[in-house]
Image (cartoon, rainbow, N blue to C red; front, top):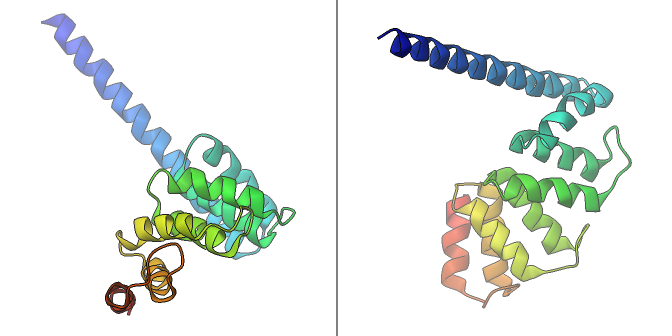
Amino acid sequence: MRIIINMQKIVSIFILLLLTLHSVLAADLQKGLDAAIKEDFETALKEWRPLAEQGDDKAQHYLGLMYRRGDGVAKDDTQAVYWYRKAAEKGYSEAQHNLGFMYAEGKGVALDYTQAVYWYRKAAEQGNSLSQYGLGFMYDYGKGIAEDDTQAVYWYRKAA
């Protein structure tokens, strides 16, 4: 009986540590957001880079945005794509949209409409209205996918 009680205490302590760690990480993400809103990109970068390197999809996406716009770092579309892809592969719809856009425009990657459609669809299916519009556009003009007016209208309506 004593062993079970001790195991319960250990599990409880472990869960408390995980919750504490999660709130610390969340606070760092928020601190970075607050700094970015104030255009203090040095602080935002300091907060987000460690989180991104640890696999936080939102921090990865935010780093992608910083590199895409040149906020506090040298503008670098290749680095933007790198960070967008990391977050997109985890299912983060905003990063999926931005990665689709980069393929559609040939920014930081070779122009590839098929890949643009792939990433737009992933985000569109999660309800991302910008990607729904982007996917409608791709169907409308037959870019990366067969031209299909019915599908174009479907995705345009979803976006609207």
